[in-house]
Amino acid sequence: MNRPPRLSVLTVTHHPRFLDECFDSLLAQTYDDWEWVALLNSGARWRPAQTDDRVRLIIDDTTQGVGAAKQRACAEARGEILVEFDHDDLLASTALAEIARAFEEHPDAALVYSHSAQILEDGSRDDSRFDTSNGWLYHETVVDGRSVQYPQSLAPTPHNVSYIWFAPNHVRAYSRAAYDKVGGYDPARYVLDDQDLMCKLYQVGDFHLIDRCLYLQRMHSRNTQREADTNAFIQTETVALYDRYIEGNALAWALRHGLLALDLGAAHNHPPAYLGVDQYPGEGVDIVATLPEYLPLDDGTVGVIRAVDFLEHVADKVALINELYRVLAPGGLLLSNTPSTDGRGAFQDPTHVAFYNENSFWYYTDARYRNFVPTIKAAFQVSRLVTYFPSEWHEQHHIPYVTANLIALKPPMPRNGGLILI
Image (cartoon, rainbow, N blue to C red):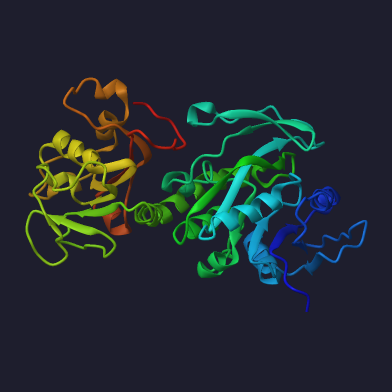
């Protein structure tokens, strides 16, 4: 057998209308150590206009769903680097060379990605823009003779990676070793297979941004996200995936950056990945401290704080949030879950001395309210703020919880997607 190529470019398609253009953009690459695994699904058929031994066509009419199709394509791939290439898009001529170089310079990266520009169905410039109040910055460039605008990809923070809205877009490439380590694509997924895989990869390795526009994403009526029902599902499902992965992503980020992870009230249900903080010594308690008194930690040394069933036990709310903010690093996350005053749980426990609902967190995240409390030093961006019932039992007993996941706003730090109100 011939030596395996370094890069495997992966495309799955049920509608091969644009595959000739995809193939042309591969032939134009300045780097030639690649193969193209094109999986033709759901009756799709196509052959390249010219023979090229690097093209491997796989016909599979039985596999259902994009997650399963991509999993099959990856199983066929022989390269040590796997490159996603959607069936209606175009690669810049230097894309594969840049990807290969990025992995040479960052061999421990789980994923590398670039900036990407949108084009219209006919390949012309797309001047539509995302809402810039969510942190998007636009730049002009020329990609292989085409004048395009592109949004600057956001940094791979736990928050950004955990939402498809802000996660790395194309071009995306991941190491085969990392892909296999996390179990690859989820074959049960019909949408957001990419977000699910990225979150799993983020927990085993760093992401590296190639600071160039290397991908042209074609926008047309057949785009999956243009279907109204599918798009509505994506908007809710990306939040469900955030809820599944945000804590693990925050822990992985903290570890990679040499930051601490704290579990407050560690005398009960202390997770092993954290240093335990409690007012009394005991099993699972690493730091004995009575908040809101001073924690014996330097400023900005903590990457993630877990506060589950904790905030309601500290009477001085402002002092508590200020102290947690002090020890959090720039971009560090406070992950809190607290019985809400919208139900009975906040009041029924005789040990509860502080009371919270969603509005309680406005004072730390919105200048319009923070300005009324001059003693507040903390400044946060909302990552997730929601009221919900943790289980059917909680719902039966009218005990809703408020989840407030907050990002510490301190310089220097990269921009997290979404509104900043403080």
